[in-house]
Amino acid sequence: MLQGTASHAGKSLIVAGLARIMAQDGFSVAPFKAQNMSLNSFVSADGGEMGRAQVVQAEAAGVEPLVDMNPVLLKPTTDTGAQVVVKGRPVGTMTARDYHKYKLGLLDAVSDSLERLRRDFEVVIIEGAGSPAEINFRGHDIANMTVAEIADAPVCLIGDIERGGVFASLVGTMELLEPEKQERVAGIIINKFRGDRAILEPGIDFLEARCLKPVLGVVPFIDDLRIEEEDSVGLPASEGSQVADGQPRQWQQALWPSDIRDAGDFPERKTVKVMIIRLPRMSNFTDFDAIADCPGFECHYVEQPAALADADLIIIPGTKSTLPDLRFLWSSGLAARIIRLVETGTPIIGICGGFQMLGKRILDPHGLDSGAGTAKALGLLDVETIFEAGKSTRRTRATVSGATALLPRGTPVSGYEIHMGRTSLGPGAAPLLTTEAGNDGAVDPNGLVLGTYLHGFFESDAVLSGILSFFGCPAALPLLDRSALKEHNYDRLARELRLSLDIERVYAIAGLV
Image (cartoon, rainbow, N blue to C red; front, side, top):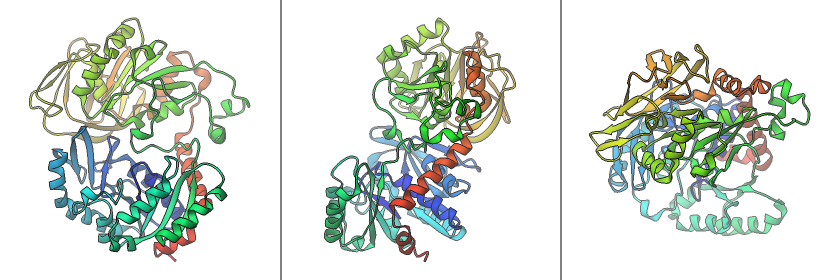
């Protein structure tokens, strides 16, 4: 089991890297995280909802993502509340205090999922959550040391040196653990180091002498590693921050299409400036990795109206709290600016909650989103959404059937739905997609306002090609092989970990040698 001194210490990435290494070495490997708090989720093959971090780890291991890999998912709706998803299905929305009382009842579900994985795979790599030394959670832990005890698993403790204070964090965490939990810690990993490791040697010696635990390695900060972030903490935060610059990263040039790779110095090309609205409770921001990685696009997150001035394309992403984020659009001035730009011909695409916001009204008669009521939406699509009990979670394939300016009819799309709410179309809108189960989304009469419930919409090469062609950027085609890019990154991560960690000792701790 890998635990960390804090959230964002790098647990998820190191689990993915170790899963890749063990898969390369011939083991069948499954990741496991008992409880994950994230707005980045995915739909498994059986229609269950799970955190995307465990999907990434499963991909790295070369196995199909299973809900058992993340039996409890918390999706924050407010600063003090979250929707609780157990075994892929929502069981309700709870305040932090209510969940604190409720969660011990989930240990059976956690144990059951863990046991199935241990039965079906040779190795299970368990990821903790936050820190194991949170005093206020003692007696209510279902994610860290309690899980290690259930699995009788040794623990490797990870500290993030990039944030500073790594020695105090590691020593302090060990000091705050009860003696029997200290005994379960088998080694320490220092993560995200920049610089000369020799300078760290006195600190490593101190750690080993003070904690009486071996330091298993110092993992460097890996620049330009294109592996999905678990949550928005890892995204650029500043106004107008760039998601990707539309130019190839040096290390990945071998994976780019030959017409771009053979250009040598990658001459400047026409790019499409994509502005993604950074909503306060934005979910599934991984929807935009594909468009950010694709040559010909320059993507930015924006939070202020002025940043939209030179937008070629605007995207409103999904959100776990549609009505509060809609209020943010109005109060920030973004809504008014978006409406003016669309009225003068700037295309816009709304995904999931962003699609709902493009309509005329959103009704929440039962207070399922954030309190009962009706909200005025942007009015850019002739649709209306009403929140109802129940949640749609499924994978699907579709084709563009509406008359859009950006995409020709018949453009293939695939993805997954995770949403509450039913959207009905008025006479001024037509369905955007025809899916395996019926119609999805909407498009306005001008073909420039598009909305869909389908996450993964931009992972279709045909969608990206259609958008580039609309803006006159055919020189950027053919597109990057995203599957090869993912494999390249997982392999690169594994190489870095093999070089920086004592893998033989890790294997010995795991009982594999």
